[in-house]
Image (cartoon, rainbow, N blue to C red):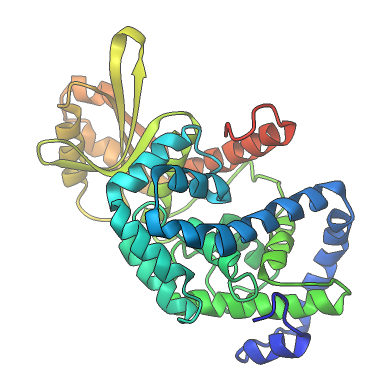
Length: 370
């Protein structure tokens, strides 16, 4: 299969994705800013880096699957933009290996690299089987490097760009995790966008190039006053994974779905060894629905672990207020250790930290440190 498809090939693969005049106009308006980026040194550096990642996943990784090692997993994780926010990537690598086992990783990557099989089938299988690397951002990024002509990247920036360009009717940008079928629809939307980019004069447009475009469209502006989010508008797993990534960015050993005490399994845990204090643990529970008394009981059980310093309930404003009210009658010792974190604030913190790390990485102080 050629690296770049002709415009006719793109149109044939679009599967009846038809953009409206308004959507095309929004894309056209965004192209003016994008063109400035394409003419910059930043684009040339980004292009070189991303093409090196394509080369890694298409040519360097397949021969390594015969005897996959920890060093190979380390190299793979470092290649992913989705893991760039982890301050301690070695911890992430160790967790990927321990959670999955090398034999499962070998098998899963062989399947993922088998381009003879449908994208949706490989996407669903990898997401179902592999922990930590099976999340939407990292999985779709790997697929994009493996098949840049067929696969795009579904992450926060792409979802934001879908809203800006008015493309919500095809795939819901509020969804954190897509099914394989939905991911294929998203790819078809990107092919339609690619046609518009080609019509504007850009050459060698594949879906990795479209990802460049979506990233620029999403912009770097962070909303200082995020909208109030209700339980109906936030995704539990997305918020859970954001909290994990924030912990990773801050240098904690961060994990999801952890048993911290007898009968207490929680959504997120941050751990750190701090001087004479020894191991310090912070526990987070994301509450979208269900009984609040069960939530509080789980947090009380978690607090019984001697290393747990703080337990944090995470939800929308309305439910946090209810949690605070129901916690009033609980022992004071527990209430002093109980904190509350709004979902909107979690997202804001994540965006700010990612922007800060991007700036620091741009300085090139210590390669691969973030």
